[in-house]
Every structure is written in structure tokens, then in C-alpha cells.
Length: 398
Image 1: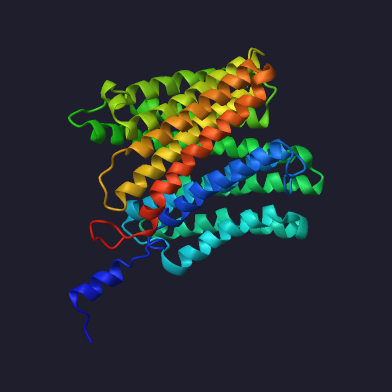
Image 2 (image 1 turned 120 degrees about the vertical axis):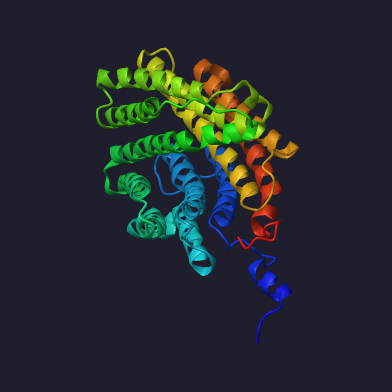
């Protein structure tokens, strides 16, 4: 029996569309985890609850925001982007649900680690990134996109290693936990640098219209390579004076790179300025690394300039953009979205300034920054949950 047109449309566009494409469940999980994890961190910071699994509470905070929240965003973005790049399907339906459940199992294993043997916690949590790598490797291999296959599968493999190092703290190899967290920060920085070069100029040209940005391929390559060189030296030989010179070089090259992407008209478009400000925070984090090496500011300032400023803004900016574009909507910032961007920007500014100034107001800056973070991602969940669980508004199948 053949299906009529309405029946076919209803099968293509069910009312509950969460499992139709990777960005939907993983962006929702990212938004919810951003709220839950930050709320838990405030309770841990004020000693209302104990940090699970890691003896050092800061390791838990770092691990869950990097290997929890951030990997959810990465999964949603890559599963969606790879389908666009290759024209081949990525995970949908039950396989996508199982991958999301594997990510969630990692979070639950960490949270309930007191009830579980440490090797089981390690296996459950570390498993997610290799499975994600396999999920994107298959369509990339079939479409013969070898550069993308090499870049992104290698990065996910190195992120798996970084996660493994954080868990080895339970084998009495304490320094490795911090080393794994630092490695993950650098890997995310490199991933952002690679992806920003691909999407930020493109989005800027389309978002403003009627402009063509002048690109310098050598500057693009050198900007990323300088970051890789700095990251390798800072992670492997943190005491070497070469590292700080590489940070300064990366600062200059990436500042020039960002300037080539710039156009005055972008500041009228929130969906653009959020991405440009995110990359500007990356540049500032490199400057702060130089200043910290000179003992002018605390080293933690560099970390929060990147994690709150760059990572926070670029993930929120990309989640809103991808959610709108792949649900058939016009890409534009609503009032709530713009407020979320501003709140997250304020969270980064307050946290960095509080770290520089220090003193009696340091704890207040942590609370205020966390509060703005919670508002930003709370607004994201409120506005984008209906978009993520409902079908496209243009009637397209995914």
C-alpha cells in the first residue's frame, strides 16, 4: 500500500525530531550540562557538596566542562558538519540515541564514582570520544575526504588520550591529571583555530553581504601552526623560555589573522560579533600567557580568558547559529539570544578582571561570573529546546 503525501510528510517530519541529526541531542545536552555543572561547581566551591571522583575539586570542574560540556558541543557540530561536507548520512535515530546515552553515562559515572570501581568509571567516560571518531570517520572515508579525516579523527584521538591522562590520577600518577586537562585545553584551542579560519570569514561575508574579505593563505596556516608549536612546548616543556616566545608569535600572527576577518559592519550583527569576540579572547589569552610568564598576572587569568571568553562564546554562538540554520530558520539573534551573548561576555570579563585584581573581591567575581554563565545558558535552553526537539519549520526532512 502506497503512502499518500501527508503520510510521507509526517514520517519525514515527526513531531518529536530530537534524533534526526546530531546537533539536536548534543546541543541540548550541552546547554543543560552547562547549567547543571556550573550550579554544582558553586555548591562545591562553597563546600556545600563534595566534588566527585577527583581529589582536587578544580580537576572535576575542569574535566566536566572540557570532557562533558565541550565534547557534547563538538559531537553535535561534527556529526552535522560531516553530513554537509560529505553528502552522506551521519548517525540518526537509535544509533544517535545510543551515542548520546554513552556521553550521559560518562557524566553519571563521574557523578556516582564513589559507588563504582575506578577502572569502570575510566572505561565508561573515555569511551565516548573514540566512538564519536568512528562515527565521523566512516562517511569521511567513504567520501575520500582525507584531510578532514586526518585532522578531526586525529584531534579526537588526542582528546581521548588527554581524558585518559586525567583519569590516571587514580593510579597515584597525580601530575598526569593536570597534564591531561592542560592537553585538552590546547587541543580545543587548536580545533577552534582551525574551524574559525573556515567559518568566521565565510559567515562574516554572508552576514554583512556585498563584501569580500581578503584572505592570506600563508597567514592562515602560520597562525594555526604557531598555536600548535606553542601548545606543544607549553605542555611538554612548560619551564622552557622558548614557549613564551612561541606564545608571543602566536599572539601576533593570530591578531593579524583576526584583523583580516574584520569588517566594521559585523558589530551590528550579534551572530557575527559573538564569533569575532570569541576569537579575540583567544588572542588575549595568548597575551595573558606572556604576561603571566613575566609574573605580571596570575596564570589562571590565561585559562579563564580562553575557557570562558573563547570557548564559552564560540560554542554558544555556533550552537545558536547551527540550531537556527539546520531547523530551517533565518539566522538572526533574537532578544533572548543577544542577552545570552552579553551575559556570557560579562561572565568572561568579570572572571578575568577578578583574577587580575584578586584580593577580597576574588570570591565575589567567581560567583558573579558563574551567575552570568548560568543566565546565558539558561536562556539558551529556554529558547532553543523547542527548536531542537521539533521538526524543521520549512518541511525538510532533517
